[in-house]
Amino acid sequence: MNIWSIAVKEIKSSLREKRTFIFMLALPIILMLILGSALSNAFDETRTVGDMRLLYKSNGTNEEMSTAWNSFIKALGDKGVEVAQVSSGMDGQEEVRADRYTGYAIVSDAGIEFYGSSKNAIGSNILAGMLTVFADRYSLASAAYQIDPESALAIVKGTGQRDDFIHETTLNPNKKPGAIDYYAIAMTTMIALYSMFSASYLFTGERTNKTSTRLMAAPVSKGTIFTGKIIGSTFVNLFFVLVVFLVSKFVFQADWGNHYGMVILVLLTEVLLAVSLGLGISFLFKGEGVRAINNIFTQVASFVGGAYFPVDQSAGFFSLLAKFSPLHWANTGLMQIIYTDNPRGAWVAIAMNVSIATAFIIISVITMRRREGAFV
Image 1 (cartoon, rainbow, N blue to C red):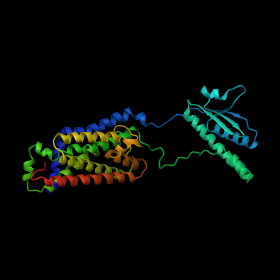
Image 2 (cartoon, one colour):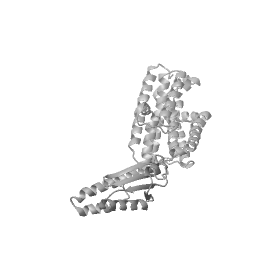
Image 3 (tube, rainbow, N blue to C red):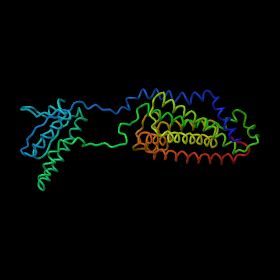
Image 4 (cartoon, helix red, strand yellow):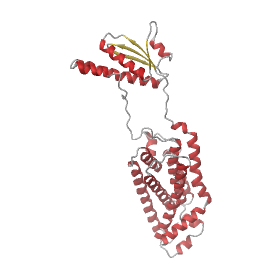
């Protein structure tokens, strides 16, 4: 009962701190709104290709080649690509250079030469890909013709009929985070990490408020006080995190997926990690050094962890640094569970959070026991 009494006392005293209350709630919500609105275009992956126009010149004399090519350009026309044959006196390369056509193809018995437009690189690459598929299919048909003419004829006829040359398979190809979705996750995990600040003053605050002597004189053990304070701090900081979570979901309509239990478990373990870090730092360092370390660590971890903008973590020193950020573990795990229904990243984040939290709690306990008659 003493543990819960101390935990409740810690919760009440934390909620009475108006500045902390406003900071932990207003900061993430305001940043979520500002960054989510200002950077919304950065998360729009829609690309407009525009009209694609293919100019071609046919120098082929092979009948099978001509049949296959005619079938192919007919299929292109059905898909919305405007196909035109070069007329007398027209310079195909100049037409592409002047951006009147997306690409120019010279078809001969030896193969296809393609000239793409640098002004419409996306459309040019699409046409080049289509022509590559056609050339590969025709090469296959030519090889098959020498063995089985009937199978070769079937391949040639099907050259322009397939519409699934590129096939994307995901659990949900259209489910990707928008700006609000991203910053809802980033700000929620960031404010969970900010639990370090209040946790670092769990015991030093007793000395500041001149209540440490009275606390030591109470008929309860250090372990009871220690446990009660950790539970109280974890509970109140989780409360702030859940409020931000609920506001982002129901006010900003952010997508948190369907695995709410796993999402909350990741957030809970991150809060526990932050509380343990703050507590451990307060036992290992003194005075203003605690605040300086908290400020530096939270800002660096937030920056490299992607709290303010998505970070490319594919390679380099920045990628290595990001792997040490609790926000990186949490954000990666949450993104995977929300957008791919893959819990592996979430379990990794939970394991990392609990492991490091346990290590810092042990460090705090050892440091506390070495001090005679005082917490700080």
